[in-house]
Image: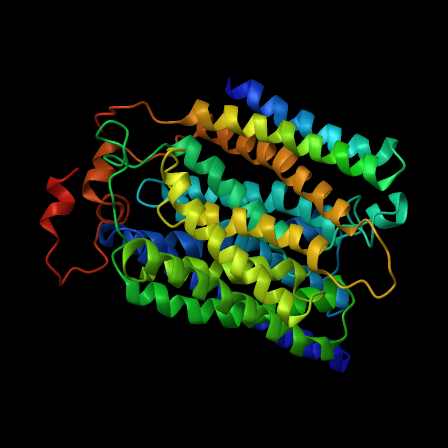
Length: 59
Length: 398
């Protein structure tokens, strides 16, 4: 889950970067850049969940 | 040296006060049994980061240190690398080994920081977004909200994940136990030091990296102060409403959060914009400090992730929202958005990977015995306050 989360972070950046390079209008670029940020948010959720301490930790 | 360079040098000389402030905040928000360790770790991290960054500038990039404006920028970045290296110490308090924190500071100053700082301040691809792709003036960050604060904050997040929470933090059904800081006085005093340091950092950064004239230092100082004040007042008001009285440590975090958020936009916004940026940063810090601790389960004793990463990201975005564009160039918000995507999507995986690899070859977390004794006794052999009786509950509770 952790690795998948980090891959999603990289994929989100790639989407945002590709949007700026490949698209022309500001609206298109903005929509795709925000889609990239949304993918990064999904990645963050996975990474955070992978690092949450187990419930009832004794220490 | 030109008069403008002398003025700029004066601002650069104020920056170590920000480091002193952050070090005192880290120490005050930690436990008394790790206080000397926290201060020494801060000084060591500054020293390691400054040496690594200076060596990299001299020997890898061949930048001369000859008193030219370019060498002044190297000096500011050397201090910036040190500031960024201080930030993770707050998150790793009470459990991060001294040697590991120095090694992590070296990785930050040698890899992560120079890479992103070059993209933003060294004419890299983020700075060129305007020229190459028509996105406003390219990614803008006058005082290092992204390259110093967010890079440091994301490293703090990585270190916190790798170290895990302090013993006893999530003991009962996963709910967090309150482990308050040991000295609110030095935390609040440190806020005054950070204020001076940030005035220098923002003014010097704006002059050296955005081409602002030395006379612009006055509105930059006004914006920095207004943003920090708004952050503090927002935090004080919210904690007063939520808890019945203002919380000193949270208010200190709100103040620093306002300073951090002001860094990116201080040279480009009106005073009203600076107040709005600071207010939003104060609100953000108040709620993210609690949310990060629970339910996210991230043990960040000093709130560095909220104060530096979250507020820094907001400050970067705020440039796209509040910056005045005299020439009517559009797309600035998009350049800032691409910068944010780069920080989260590239810098976070990079800094996590580096610290994860470091942890594989050199365990970063102190032994359980060290946490029980306190970092002062375990790693330094003596406590910070030997004349005071130790609080019994510190040893019996955990």
